[in-house]
Length: 470
Image (cartoon, rainbow, N blue to C red; front, side, top):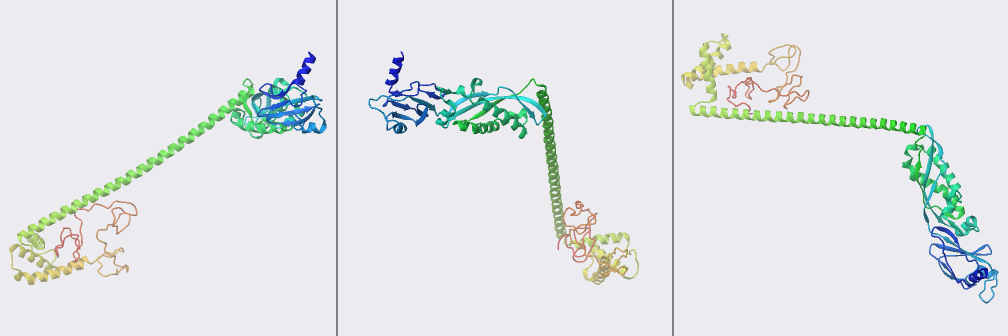
C-alpha cells in the first residue's frame, strides 16, 4: 500500500484546492510533485510553495507549470536532474483571500461595570458577529498555521480553543466597561450606542490582528445581555422610569403653557381686531348719518328757498317778518329805553312792521337804514368781545386790561374741544384720549363771514348766506 501511495505522489500532475468552503488555509495532501505538474490557483486564492519546510514562491490566481524557469528560488538552489523526477520533498498551501462572513462571537462571562447614570454596579454580557479576511498569506502561515493542515472559522474563536478567542474577549470586556464609564452611557440606553461600540471594538481588535496577517472588515455588537434578575438592575430601571416620567410631565406642562400663551395671544389679537372693526363701523355709520342729515338740510333749504321765490320775497325778508311779528306781540318798546337801544328796537320793529303791513321801501328806508346800522354796530361790538381766563369779561381789545393775556384765536370751522383739555380737534376722535366727537345738538350755533355770530338757523339773518358756505 505504501508503494502505491508513493507511486501516486510521483504520478500527480494537477495541483488544485480541494478543501472546505469556509477554510482560510488548506494544505494539499500530496507533498512530492513531479516537475512539469500544473498548479491551478482560483480567484480570491493564493498558493504558497514550501520545500523542506521553507516557504518559497507565492502564486496568485492562474495556471502554472512547475518547471525550473517558473520556480526561480528552486532553480537557484537546486540542479534538477533529467527524467522529470522530483529530487526533494515539497508542500503547497492554499490561502483563501475571500472575506469570511457571519462568524459569531460572545462573551464567556459577564462584564461587571459601573453605571454612571444610577451609580450602581451591574453585570452585562455581549454577543454578535464579525467577518475576517487574510491580508498577508505568508505571515498567517508562518505565525499562526505552522504545520497544521488547515485553518477554518472554528479555529479562530470556536470551542474555547480558538487562536484569537482570548484576545477578542479581553478587548470586548475591557473596552465595553471603559466606554460606558468614559462616555457616561446609560446601560438602559446602550442599544442606541451599539454602532459606536462596534466600530471602536473593530478598530482595537484589528490593531492586534494585523501582525498575524488578518483583519476584521466588520465587527458587530448585536446584543447586550442585561441581568434582569439582579436587584441593582431592577432599581436602576425604576429610577430611569421615574426620571423619564418626570421629564415627560415637564415637557407636557411646557407644551400646555406654550399653547395657552398662544391661545391668549390669538384671543387678544381677535379682540383688538373686533374693536377696530367696530370703531370703523361706527365711524362709517356716523359718516353716513351726517351725510344724510346734510342732504336733508340741503333739500329742506332748497324747498324753503323755492317756496320763498314762488311767494316773491327772500329769506332775509321772511326772517324780518317773523321778528316783527314777535315784536308786535311784546310791544314796540324793548327792555331798555332811550339812546341807542330804542333806536335799534325801533329799527327792528319798524322793519318787521314794514314787512307785515307792506309799507313802501322809500318811506321806511331812512329809518330802517339808521336802525340797521345802529343794531349792526351794537351786535358787532357785542359779538367781537371776549372773556379772559383771569375773569375779565366782555374784553373788546386784543389784550386783557387786567392780566395782559392775548385775545385767543377764533376756532377753525368744524373743530371741537374735548373734555380732556385738547382743543381745536378736526378729526372724529380725540388724539389725546380717544374720545369720540360729540354729536351736534339741534341748538348748535355758527358764525357767518359777514360778522354775524351765534346763528342757530341754517341761514344768516344778516346777509342770508347758507350755513357752511364760505
